[in-house]
Image 1 (cartoon, rainbow, N blue to C red):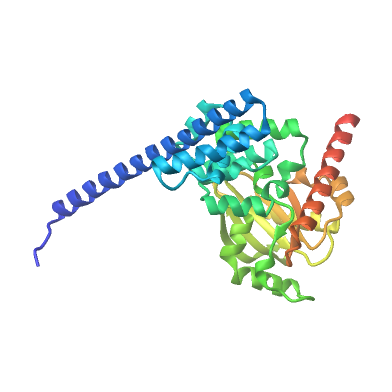
Image 2: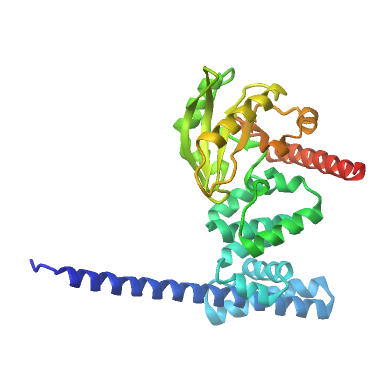
Length: 347
């Protein structure tokens, strides 16, 4: 067998790298071209239907167009596909924006996003796709699990959501309101009823990868049962994570019952200890997450936990129906928005 010299290996690696880069460039160009083509088709048909102003004409022309395109170009031009093109052009009505985004998102991303009805929700998913490089399956799963409605940002007035998403678009810098969720869905832990905090923690550690996926991209596990000796008394924090984009340590404490006011003082103690002893140069102050079986929203509001860098979120160990989850989240969003409006009126 011929022996390959070091310099030859380096040459092979460099040329292989050039081939891979070229393949990626071709794939990006092809994706961009097909995406813009679908937009042009959708826009052209939409214009034709609007000019005729007849719904029955729209149905007929789509059927005719599908048959003719299939005859001329083969598979891939079904009525369903053409309706996806129509929806795409209706939802994303600026061709220049579509062209710019097509370098980062695939046609399947656009198709999925086109069916997200709420404009702010769609913008959230679009920006998070770009920043965190979600695949199309990831995107569908996030939408199905109502990720936007579970983030802290969704509880703000719409004008503030718009401002924060526009800022994200320009800077690509995540804020805690975009990272933290409520509730967290932990149905994958497989816990039976009447579990203890220890069993909850053990189950999370056994399913650590899936727990981190539910926490969100950017989280890295640091330590469990972190020991803190304060005034000769030993304290233990359930879980310690680090978030790369936020550049902060995140202390997580697990609670079985409803939120209690006393939890604030305990978490503040943990955060100040971590800030003094664990953070390194360039990191921001740590954040705390109290995961409770149920929240006490009036207590949480009165304690102004956000000023202390503490978040409270519920966790769900049995996934409810989508309708029940939707109802719960909508009520929570309404409550938080009214609270913020009342707070603004008081000021």
